Picture 1 (cartoon, one colour):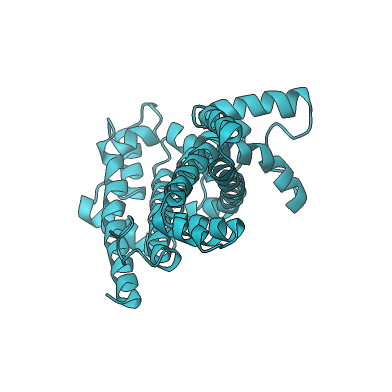
Picture 2 (cartoon, rainbow, N blue to C red):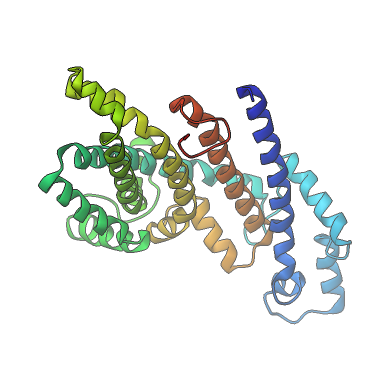
Length: 319
């Protein structure tokens, strides 16, 4: 199978999966106890005329298939409906908040990749006490949930030392980065430990392989052996883990944004869920699913390019 055919097939599969996910996301609203109108009324008593007006405004009297088709058509046009809580277009809410979340994820991902790869490589190459120290540190990191890390970082670096703001988003590029530093570290801590351990294991496996022994016997410098024969051949496993890292960041950002009062889509999702703002919840859920699938698509396309031993459509080493 050629790369182009594989890419086209994966994009088609992603589109079909996203269509199925949109049906589940939209239909989940109607699995909640009570009618959507009762949520919109927030438990207040209302006259039959008021209930009919709400049903008419949100097309709740239409058949399910009609409502889903209308909603899906709007989504394809970039129209996610109108927020019940904020009384504005959901698309506008997302446009205001999504850049903050993407910046937070980008900062956290940078920390994860730089620190995780460095620690994993250091542990595999140095061994001994260095390896033991990295294992202890990564065990602590993996065992610390994001919301716990958020509380600890806030208490130490924001409240006690005052080095960073305790919450908010900030004004301007530099101030925004400063405000997002602690949330990014809290979001990255668990994943640093996971990526470091995966990198270490993959490199140790490559260090014991036959081609590394042959390279060393031919007098290839150790740095070149590590760089070209060990680390490079470990990238397939590391890249697969990288897809999981990004997906985890998308999910955990809800907890971290809420803890630090960051005005991103994570906090918006938490608030919208609490207030039963269905159009906003549906839009954010669909975006998260789409980003999750896009990350997996990119990983699948990059794997054969990073590690030629892999065939298209596989995520494990070729025999």
